[in-house]
Length: 276
Image (cartoon, rainbow, N blue to C red; front, side, top):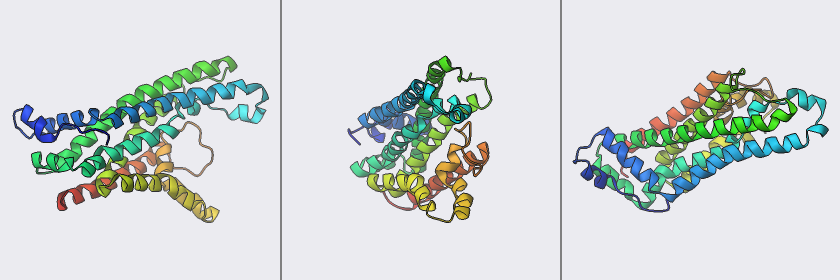
């Protein structure tokens, strides 16, 4: 983490010394926004969410005249409008890891646990604060990206309205996907307790694992791929699926949430049983 944030004891002292969940949440809010890494990472996520969608749609429309009839027939401006999550997810996931692993690196986590001896309220507060911030920012960014994309593609009459089938679900679903992704990153950071290790686990689980399954026979890969974390999570963000090997929209998202819940539960058990 880039700068030191106020410790939990300091915040608790300013709020009357009572260790309540609300006070712990306030402490984690202060710590999160006192770090430059938070502002930079979230700014990257917002810019990526909007910039990638706008940039891709602008390039596609500039080449529309040379686009094949088949590609025009399957073009989906909803998926393009929310496609920035492919890049934003990296910033959100890495910041989730940093949100707790950075405290282990600096030793600040000991101060937090001195103020909150039961420990788990610290983890719940971190999750609540980070997930709330990610959802709010990504929801706004996704709406902006969606409407900006539709304005760009309207000249070729391939735009969609927010009330069209799958549009609103894809927009809100993208914000939900990124929120759960952030929780997964934070859970991995709490589990591994090391920034490099947490980021490696995040990248390996979400991005390396699909590459490994690609080496399997096609029949096996087709059966396994829909249940991989990232492929399962993508179902709620997607308007048009490229192939038939996928879970249902909310079934896949439920699987992704289950992965995240398992990581958080294991991290919680380790948090209680092992010293910081």
